[in-house]
Length: 148
Image (cartoon, rainbow, N blue to C red; front, top):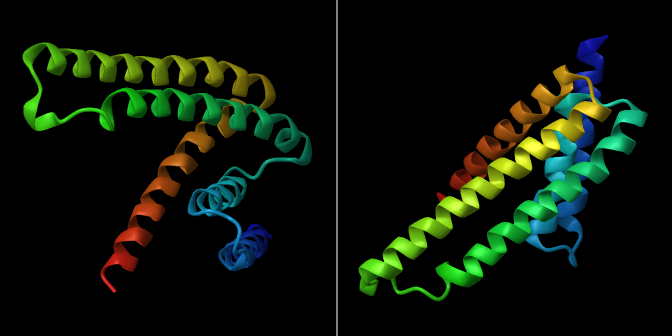
C-alpha cells in the first residue's frame, strides 16, 4: 500500500511540476517554491489538519528568513566592491554576515518550537531532511540543465 501512495505522490509531483512550468506569469522563484511545497508534502506526508496548521507557520518562517537575507544583500552585497575594501569595511562585512547567520539560527530555533506544537517530532525531523534533499535535487537539476 505504501508503494501505491509513493507512486501517486510521484505522479502528482510530476503533474504539478509540469503545470507550474507551463504557467507563464509565475516567476522562477514561485515555480521553485511550488516544487518545494510538493516535495515536502510528499516526503513528510502531512495529514490534512497538520498541513493546515503547518504551512502558514512555514511560510511565515521563510518570509522572515528571506527578509533577513534581503536586508543583508541590500546593505552589503550590492554596495560593496570586495576588491577594494578597507580593513574596517571588511570587518563590518564579516560582522554583518555573522549577525545574519545568528538571525537565521534564532529563527530556526524559534520555528522549531512552533513546528513541534503542530507536528509530531518525527515529522519535524522529516521536514528538515526533506528541505535538505530538495536543495540537493534542485542543485542537481540546475547542474544538469546548465550542461546542455
